[in-house]
Image (cartoon, rainbow, N blue to C red; front, side, top):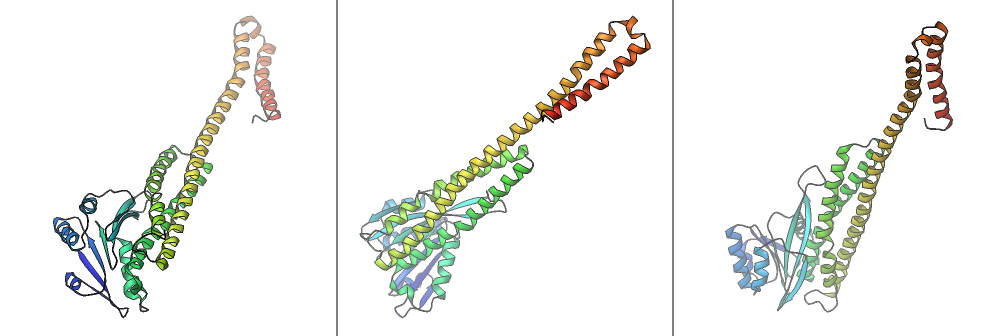
Length: 318
């Protein structure tokens, strides 16, 4: 699906299809999809904007790492985000967004509908002050900012899940908690692997020698870089929290095992003298036949466990 946004000199924005590409003015072209039709449109746009074949190849073959490359006449950079696909915080789907930033045009390419593109489009159409006439690099900032900010609710939900899991483990550990810990750990590894490299990409967009990014817009990209730093710090904290939750689970299970072993040891300790008493009197039939000896054996079997119980309480083993 090809959508064209044309930025007029008076601050208004026109949204439409391919017919707007014949108009004059700063232009944002958004291409969504992975079908043969969209790929054919991408190749047409590559001819129109003089894109390098390596860039086009990166768009055709997704799963690119976050990166920024400078080509004659424009910049090409790749950024990633995530969207939730279910109620579970681990049900995340990476979203890859390709940017082509020229002197007066911006081309964004993505496979599925992007919330960041929709948010940037909403802000673009709602702006009545003509802010976006200052350059298409500001539009690229809007998309990148929305893409990065969309990760904060997901990371916050991930942190809340970890904290809730930590509380549940210390309250009542369960073997199912271990499986959940590893699920969260795998998701955390994915988040860090995708989001961490983007700091370098946005950092390069803030350099003074970067073409096609004005000084005013570089300040905005610094804000995006700051958001990425905050995300990285939160992910680092979550990484430590995952390790603490795992260690807490192992410690609680070890304590439970030690408690069970202690109780079994106490039971065995109580029955050990009883077994001796029964065995001693059981081998002496003539002694046991006397009523006094019989009652002595029963009294001993009652007194010895009671003394052991008092001794265990005194040592704080119970």
